[in-house]
Image 1 (tube, rainbow, N blue to C red):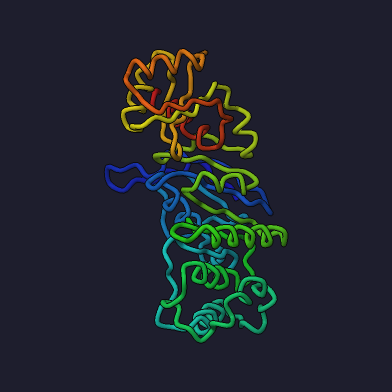
Image 2 (spheres, one colour):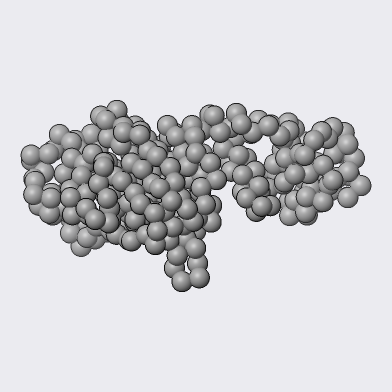
Length: 302
């Protein structure tokens, strides 16, 4: 899969700006970024649902614009919102999608057995009455029933519980082991480590592409995790410190990235003078979210 200089605007809003990257055959590739970053727009272009303003793409060697009919036979697509027929049963939905692609559940059951077997006991239940995790599994089964070479998933784990998220990624890894190329978008930075490689995207721009571990290794700034009784004021005061490069909330603490060196005692003294209380400071290792925030700060400074 290749994306070369893709751009797309919606009126004055630039959704994608000169986006380029490659996805290797058999790779589990993550498109990582917050809401509004451009992930869905790019995925709709790759799945033949949207035309780019400029640039070109190839999916299994086919052009999504000029060869869209041929491409649809080889791609499994799972949109961000549950889009199956909620008034049909689990079994009826699966049969419907198999028929569209000229196959049958019986013929291709082996393709979806690992996934579908988990919801088959509920095959007579209407899709609209399924839990979030079960809807995921049904949607993935419908996307896989025609034996696609490429699977493209738009934020498949948004809005589901942690257990279902874990199970879903385990399913993706089993599909990858069968040689299927997978492109998955997610706003969850912690899911980046589950991919072979990722593209970090923000405001329609690709910030960086690489293996998650390599991206984290590239982070060279000293990093403190800081807590205090008033987080919002803490962020404001940390950002005002002369040694601060950036300060962003991270769980119940604030990650302070430094321009140079700042001793723990100096930082404690600074915050105490600002009348912060219950101060906790510890050095931490960077993760993919810290890398993303640094790249975003660099982009905004240009």
